[in-house]
Length: 69
Image 1 (cartoon, rainbow, N blue to C red):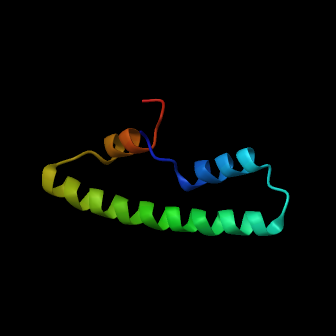
Image 2 (image 1 turned 90 degrees about the vertical axis):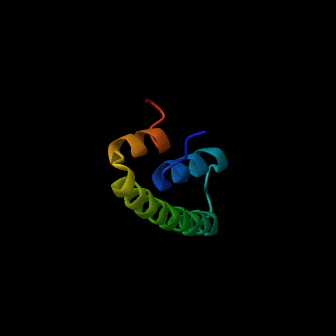
């Protein structure tokens, strides 16, 4: 299962919920910020690991976030 980027998650939420209220959008944006924070932490750890294992950051991105690959 691939992860969603924060932008993809926001898009999914807006499409699914048909956002019409300001408070709903505010909550979605706060959750997206948390997703982005976790993605940053994960990317840092993956980068650190890749330098030790000679990994490929583009390959990591494609495997984690790119559904077309």
